[in-house]
Image (tube, rainbow, N blue to C red; front, top):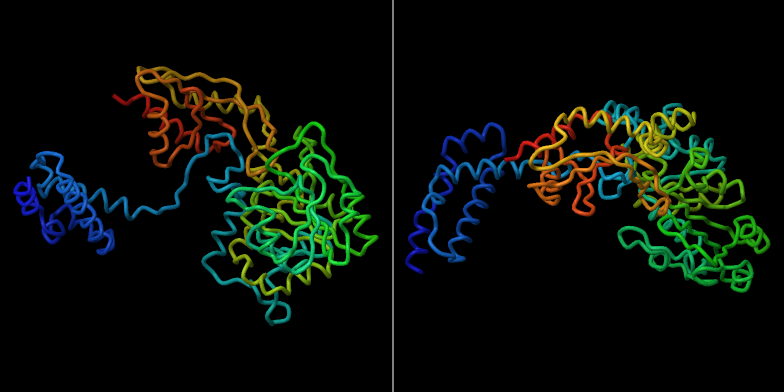
Length: 471
């Protein structure tokens, strides 16, 4: 009733009264005043909304200053908590886009910690005592590792493709196979980026088959570029055919047209020697005559988010001079992380040992099973009234749009529900500090140890131990 509402509204404590409550006033030494005021207002707004909803009598205790102050304290802590936080990836997806893609190597994070709080020679030539270029810090490493004539870096691979197309083909035609008109995460589509670059896309072939003569028939005076796009996040199998790089390069040479390849995830190590299906490396693409190659720095490379552009010196220089490059350039921390990651790649064995993405990809089943058993021992309790646990063989994914059909044999910890549901277990693990992100399949919670780091096992064991203890 309306009279009841008015009574409830009159009993709501004022902002000042809550602010002066001992439990709330104690917060002023730890939290900004504006955060505390915001928390009080949100708690009071929630209370007013409950009164306005008129769902029956309001419990008088809800209007008391003591329980309200407890809600304010909880709200303040919630508002002050950083949005970005550490999570533990127990999904088995190595390059998990939603969880930040690749982990940086420990050596990289140490350099970031030491240089992020000091000035650096980002665009200063120490030898000449004059302004320099930020690209010199990684260009020599990239050219040495890939045999490219020149290199530059922008903020992601979508930007690399965009600026390359805008520079080399704006207002002219780019020929691309219909089977390579991909869409990746975030609705990034090759046709869309082509339009944004100002280039005119010319499709050739069919979804499953494209021949050399399809390209030849479309080459004309307006053709600026032949584009090859790696289908990194899907596969076409069965009755298929595509033009090999040497043939495409030969066609481009005959007509004086450069050839560009978007490798997508990119890779500097031939993973086929470790049982992974063959992925084209940047060096191999360039050795076959590709003029411009682009790929990501934060996927199979295992570095920070970046778009790497390699190729012929005169073409890379054109791209570098494009004003769009300034808008897309990477900052000093990204550049620092990329430089240190590339330094590790100078020794392939070192890269496999130190770069988390490569290390997780190359881990064998026996090693993972030992790790899973270690986790079980840390948990201690294997069965309770809430759930039971057992190990089984499963499959991890590389993720990040790379090798979509590749399954890596792994060892999985299964949490089977009893009194507690699988969904409730997943929510509790996700609400843990730090959150543990898992998979749920067939009403069972699955934790893949491949993506759980060794220093995280104790935390995961504690989170699962709490599930056993829930009453």
